Image (cartoon, rainbow, N blue to C red; front, side, top):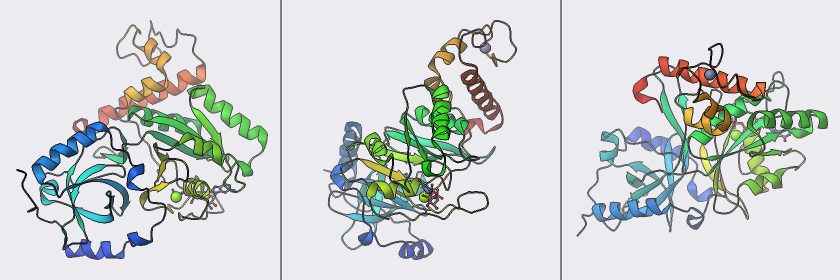
Length: 365
Ligand SMILES: Nc1nc2c(ncn2[C@@H]2O[C@H](COP(=O)(O)OP(=O)(O)OP(=O)(O)O)[C@@H](O)[C@H]2O)c(=O)[nH]1
Ligand SMILES: [Mg+2]
Ligand SMILES: [Zn+2]
């Protein structure tokens, strides 16, 4: 017979005040229904085991929002905020990401739920945050596809950053697609050149949608990237137009969007919450605050997935630690790869080598 209840709460009064200031969940539209959120079989099995240990009153729940780090959970019957059981905070395991599945309980006398256990992830979109003493930050869990969002404007369009984002996405086990925004601000020749530059680096297998949220063009192409039953995350710099794109997909102004500074077109970090929105007749997308830096740390597997042919050649170089810049017997330079692809591969591989040497090896991804 399973044990019941008894977990201690960790909430301080300060945190209680912060939570009271967060948006009331009852007013939130576009939050996915529980049936749209599909736990993996392995997560259902892990939940069943958790229930045996913790009691029948724990429920399977999905983290659908994080406001200032405070999770909101969806269960079959309810949407509520939750805190962590003491055993999780004591074990240093008190972090969840949007998309995480958890075993939670909500005692009748409390508004606030209690996260008792975080269930294993099927994918984990993570980036390195900070310098040498930085850490791995999970942006979203259990997502199927990363949508790299970038504006087509001069000074913002940056194919190297798209490749970098693709490496992180593929390393984390997700698919990748590219959405170029603000097409109304550039001419057709510029749009075509941008798509060609991306294709030259990452090939024809990655979907690229060219959009204008202003004019409504390309929005259906983005919807097609996220069919019902799939979960995506948007990844891009502040001001790229992520929230504006999601509003265009939703058909109303659900998410706050920011005026870009006139002078340099840079964003201002308008989005502060991480949240799932459910698209009509399509899947779910997680909106995120913009990210400036995307250092590559231990993402070798992702690099090999984005450049499979070059990575294979690299494994046959004469020297195991070949940098593919000057060494004799280099199969990468000796191959017949497009020079811009080799340049991108070599630059990202070299950055990873440098980061592995300087960043804390104990917490490398
Ligand atoms: N002309 C034009 N402007 C756009 C388009 N998409 C977004 N914008 C503008 O770009 C600015 C930034 O858009 P947001 O959607 O807030 O950008 P974001 O990527 O969500 O930024 P953060 O939340 O800070 O990460 C806003 O002023 C939008 O109106 C577009 O397709 N065309
Ligand atoms: Mg935003
Ligand atoms: Zn080499």
